[in-house]
Amino acid sequence: MTFPLGSHTASPNPLDDARALGAGALQLTLGDPQSWKKPAFAVPSFREDAQAEGVAVFVHSPFVLNVASTNNRIRIPSRKLLQQHVDGAAEIGAQGVVVHGGHVTADDDPASGVANWRKCIDGLEIQVPILIENTAGGNHAMARHLDALARLWEQVAASDNAPNVGFCLDTCHAFAAGLSMETLVDDVLAITGRIDLVHLNDSQGGPGSGVDRHANLGEGLIPPEMLVEVVRAAGAPVILETPGGVEAHARDLEWLRARL
Ligand SMILES: [Zn+2]
Image: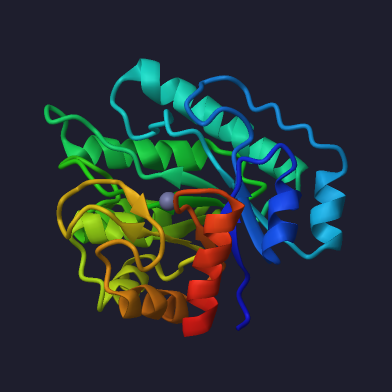
């Protein structure tokens, strides 16, 4: 295995969880994920320690952020917040900043959401790559269905900043979105040309349900062999965002390692 495995952690010292799991990667937020506040992550010597211990670090940006929005009062603060998180990620030596694809409303032309993404990407100072994540639900999402993702990526690819825009594939979101799990990695790669990170989650919601409810590996509705196959085929770092803390994540990692 050449790619690191790890989990999302909300621990005050995130490396404690990675150590307990024997993980080669971790994901964290730089502040309250539901907040618009400027990130304030200040664990002493985190960057140096993560580097010394060989732990790949990923930052998840706040869920409130929606750079696709046609509403100025959401879109403009979203861009600002994303930039702050990219800056914060650079400070702690992270490899990527995960950001959800976002959505427009039923009254909007999806093309305006895609255009907003392009402006955001063009205007960002991307010292750390942003990784756009597929989402589970909504009919006006930028990165739920493959045709929408293809429209989005046309614009991503046309930006001068394209080399610093990657993709984060979430298995729960893909399954709940109704995407084919058998061909998922190939289908995504045909559009984006890259998968930089896998969010490995089982799903409580059924195929096409649009329900974003993560489950521990083997305890949801995704056939186990398909979860494993996505990990193998993507060949990218893997982060669990499954329920529970270190103990549950240890079980999930064991589940995965036993099958890889
Ligand atoms: Zn995710």
